[in-house]
Structures are given as structure tokens and as C-alpha cells.
Length: 100
Image 1 (cartoon, rainbow, N blue to C red):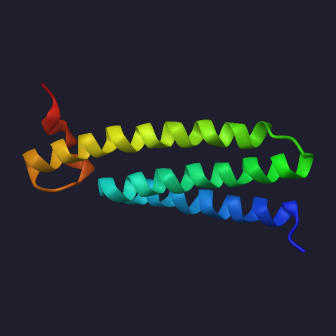
Image 2: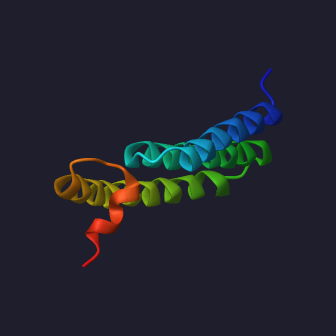
């Protein structure tokens, strides 16, 4: 039987992997994927706690997080395309080229 502890451990592992990916890599695509992994880890823990307490508050919060994540992906993709047009690579250390 899967308990709340299993979900929290999985969520912690996913969040840790996302944090490590964000801290170590410099490729913008990997950074966005790491942020999404961390957001999904938080969503998993919110849904697990929501189900454990038999309330819908956590699941409603997950819907808002998905809306914010979709906006983040749209803005991030626009910045990434702009960076690639100017530099021909997606290394975030070169992002200072976009300054006015």
C-alpha cells in the first residue's frame, strides 16, 4: 500500500533533482526543464497532502501552479528564441547580449 510518506519521499527526490539540474547546468532548455521538475514535485506533494486530509484546497492550488507554469514556459520560450537569434546558442552565460 502506498502511503503519504512514499509520495513525500518521491516529491523530495524530484525536487532535489530539479534543484541540482538548475544549479549545475547552463543550457537554458535544461534550466526550464529543471524548473518544471521542481514545480511538478511541489504539485505532487500538494495533491498528496490534499488527498490525505480529504480536502480540495491542495488540488485547487495545483491548478493555479499549472497556470503560472504555462505562463513561465511562454515567456521563457520567447526569451530563448530571442537569445538564439542573436547568439546562435542557448547558453545562459551569454544572455547579457540582450541588454538594450
